[in-house]
Image (tube, rainbow, N blue to C red):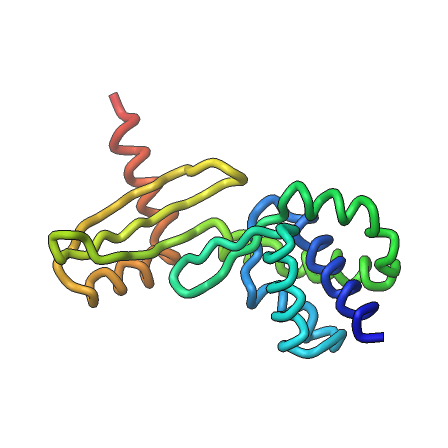
Length: 173
């Protein structure tokens, strides 16, 4: 029974990733599955790990969060076996996305991370993505880790204003 169940959880995750045009992070996937009480957190992590190993999904790590993308292999698997997901589960997924889409999109498309440079400064990379393209990709260098963390933490709230300001400044005649 366990192997049959884990296959279903994998298909649910593949289906979720296929329904959005941005990556989902571990918390977003887990929240849905745990909220519906389909399985445990550890089973979800096992399913995700196995899918990465078998190249059904691709992981990208940004500031201690893993974001998952559907691979071509994952899409093929979903096309083959997607009919094993019940209509009730599909309805639950659609409802979850309808209620959370804006929040999910923002979490997946407004990104900030930092790293130590060879000069011992900190480079902070701030991005706003739409589908597969960058609307803005800005790298700032600051002297301290605290400043780098502050920029990362504020980027989520301020990115729209900063983008609008830059566009206005650069577009005026």
